[in-house]
Length: 115
Image (cartoon, rainbow, N blue to C red; front, side, top):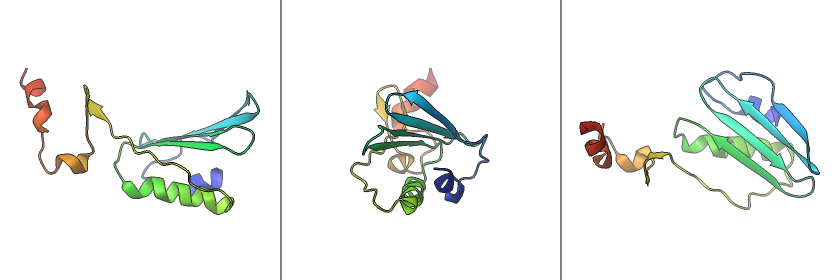
């Protein structure tokens, strides 16, 4: 994990060394956070399954791919079984910035900002 973190180009500084939690069943959890709000949580079940949850305030589509590639470079036997991308939103509406376009205020937020 440390090699994947150090190889990933993020715009923030790593806040501290990754923190490892080992007293959670057969596996472990590792957490790292950057000064720009990006963080990663890696969960291992102690057997064959690894989950990686990467959060970034910037919507850089290459960031997750770069991190996963760096993580797999350490162990090339790992395969990507599922990848979900979840944008953030307001209320029950969730959009990627690329979906909104160059509008400063999304159409769905105009009534909220006018109130």
